[in-house]
Length: 509
View 1 (cartoon, rainbow, N blue to C red):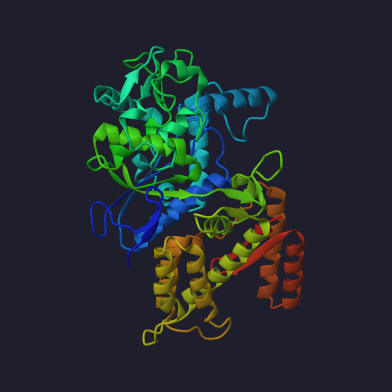
View 2 (tube, rainbow, N blue to C red):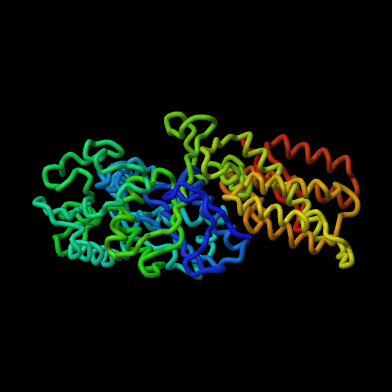
């Protein structure tokens, strides 16, 4: 079965064919977080959709080499400015944490030095990886085995400088009178193909803001910064053009080429739709002009925005959530993951608390079946059961431009064909294997628990009640067991009985 995938650069849905041919391997680069704060659920929607794409490719038999950058320099606060306007986000983080230190409000458990941007990056990178592992991002789960697949730009500054030198030598970049090295957009006629922007519109200041302070030094307002000498910048490195820092588009070109490039090309590049311009457009220009390749990435995959309860996320509106916020509210990682991936990646997703509760019920239903299948006796002579029969339809839905909702529908219909009580249909071992195969993409069955960490008093109370309920059940005092269960529910807690014992989670508010 072949994946058909919407390609942003061609604006069509195309059969996916890797450079290596056949089953791969597939080279895949994802724009990851800038580690100046905790990643929010909108960030994670994009990262999780990239993870689903990777998992679908693996389901279809491809070996995937997946790289996600963790940005610790150069990403500026004005993302719409092709030069990377405003301030470096790491400097913003440093100032914010210095203020927090003065007020005694540093992040809990943090001994980070607010004046050390690399220490700040390390702190938030560790927090991101913890969240990413909880939500099942494969690139994070394999970080111990493949740390190079989560590269940090500060460790690739040499490669960025070499890329700029190559562009200058090839006539695609120039050193302006202000000392800044700019990419010459006029030297690359295909600039704008990904985003639909035209150089003429950019000259007029449309399609993305232009940094006014540099306009008098540029050949064209559309030209973008590659290296800026600045001895006052918090993070700076020596270069042929003076001590300074790289333009924020450089990092992905340099790292993708260093870690994945085959004759200057990779198979897949993903990010949020806000990365299309200027970031990905500039990546294409500088990468292709540096290597001479006919493409930088052959397929471009972009996730649309996440809104919360029908509104744009905003701290002032109280609807701005990190992964940690949601887990503290009682969401399981499984329900949060499912809520963030179930809407098609090319549609804006509306994250709601009711949707999160619905996802939790759905995951619980799948988990209950998985537990029953695991306990049941094998029946090797049985005909193919509902899960075995569903696997092809599930895969076919995902191969159709990642129709996750359609795949969930196929799975849920198959789960419903198993009776809630009594004998299961088909051979339990093969049924469980098929369910696990489908979950290799959804990634929820093993993430359906919430730790009691962070509320020790509640945790101790719930654990004591669970122990009392277990004793009542052992004594066959079913009335007492039911009363204790009701008492636990009154605490705002949901419990789940399984083969490993009873687990609990706070009900999402």
